[in-house]
Image (cartoon, rainbow, N blue to C red):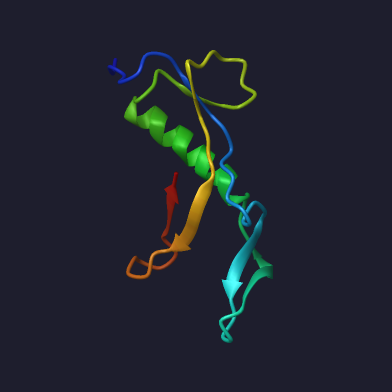
Amino acid sequence: MYETVFRGGARVAIFRIRPFDHEQMVIVAPSQAVRFSSTYKWVSPPGNMLADKLMRDLSAAHVFENAVPVGSPMFAAYEMGGHIYRFALEENAPPLTPFWIWK
C-alpha cells in the first residue's frame, strides 16, 4: 500500500483552453495565418485530454487517495480545475510533444 501525500480524493474538472476548447486542431499556414483545421482533429478537446491525463498521473503518483472526474458520486476532499493560458508546441522538443502552462 502506498502512502498518499493528501488524505482524501481529488475531483478534476475539465480545463478550459480558450480558444482551443474544441476538437479542431489549430494550424499555421505557410503565410503564418493561424486557423482551425477542417482536416486535423484531436481525439477529444485538449482540456478534456488534460483532465484525463492529470487524473491518470495523480492516481499513479499516489498524490491523493483517488482522482475522480466531475460528476462522479465518489467523495473528493479537493477540487482541481482551471484555465490554460498557453497551449503550444515546444520549439526544441521532439515532434508533436505539447506542453501546458496554467495559472
